[in-house]
Length: 432
Image (cartoon, rainbow, N blue to C red; front, side):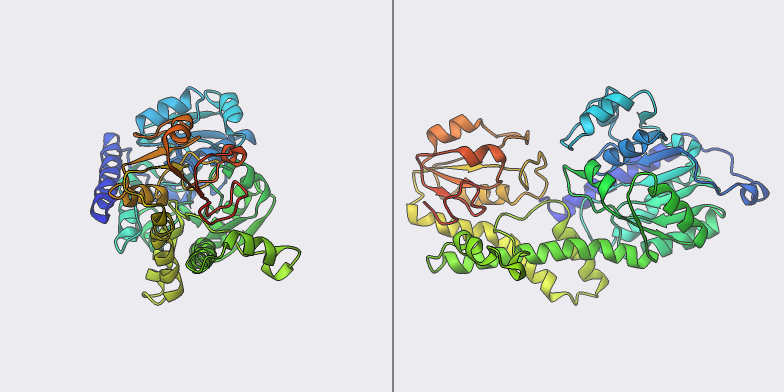
């Protein structure tokens, strides 16, 4: 995970790019009487701002599939070109075929923010490099930079995860600067890699800053979702954070159980299988593993900030996750790591993912490096510098750690001792 100062610089660069784009073309401001007369309809011209990424592109495809004319606006020129060629830049179930069918037909990508002006609905999925005290201000500054390309009569949808209170602050700004523009908060809650599938089968949270905005947002998401759940803006913002904070806490419980058991020679995977078997009150207990990714820890931070720091359980969960690579290192040390080669199987932050952002597997590799002769890292889906083929890891490593439980690893019968906190190989979670 990048240092906070690096994260801030990355976001500042993204914001600077947005400002540059916003200054390319400044359309003449709409007269007040024209703004008042603009008809508040939810049309089928949709722009997805920041839409070439893992959240925005599946959403754009979902709307394109139901007949909308979708424009994807993104600062990443390479991603824009790839999208227009009909090529996905990441794994998402069902998305490859859908993009090939709609790219250049009713889905187009561009780096030009002036394309926002033609849309009836603008959906913002611009992400943030990290959560922080200035996050809300930076998000509002981004919208302000793009304001010349927004207009009265549009519906602006906040799909990004934002600090609680951001929608209300932005609504006040729009009332003063762009009267007649509707605003809604409709946070995404899809699991990465299956976003397109989940859009079609999971309820969507919808919160309008006004009743009219709420009605428009409800009609918009009713096109692609089986159910719409209406909330107030603050409820929608906090509800998204509760979802990820709950996952972070439950995963932390499992990792703490793993550490507790391993320190006493007990196999948590064996115990997990026993206590959850046909026992309904334990069905929500997860298995242990390196719980990383770009959402869980940041949303815990956001929720803690909303609570003025009074979210001790969430902060404790985050500490458990950060410490888990040290727990695994402690389990490996009895091997006598000096002079040995350790292989890490899976560097993505979860199974069947090609996303290495905030993956704790890289932290384990960093901790192992000074204690081993070499650390060999491999992954079935992630493409990153320094990764080597699985065959080389199996041939050269003296010990293995399953750091992401990709399906291919389940059939392995390695000769080396294996530490498998996920129990992906079915041998248990102790070093064997």
